Image (cartoon, rainbow, N blue to C red; front, side, top):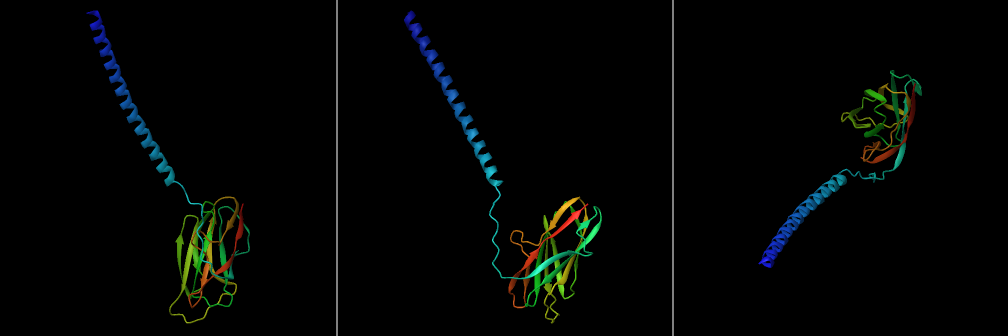
Length: 202
């Protein structure tokens, strides 16, 4: 009689133990599934934040002519808080010019842009503010029959206010897929050689 009761007790304990182990296995499986889901979500978020390091390739147009920036009064040092103007001079070699693009990069935390002025009435300009640069496109007026060539010709002026002391560069070099370029009457494109301009704010 005692052996029978002992056997029943043992079986009961084994069943309880097996049930506990089953519950523990189920809980462990659910927990590991949630961990995998969280890891996958984290990996997905990480992938979304990856920034490509390969720079866009520009179309290899010929390099002809030049673009040069000069401070209007000849300064290379300006006082913090004061306005100043940069003039842009263009040379187009022997080609006539029907339009152009200009990319002007600068530190937007150090300079506040006030105005972009068109220096040639035969062109219409369109100005676009980007994050860290200006993009200007110009097209020749359809009513103009004049053949235009640039020979160190002032085409644009940029007025800024200095905001932060330091040494800064105004660059005409390409940014992404945008670049400074000249377009002639037959829609052929050339890249003018850009020359950066350094300015001190004190």
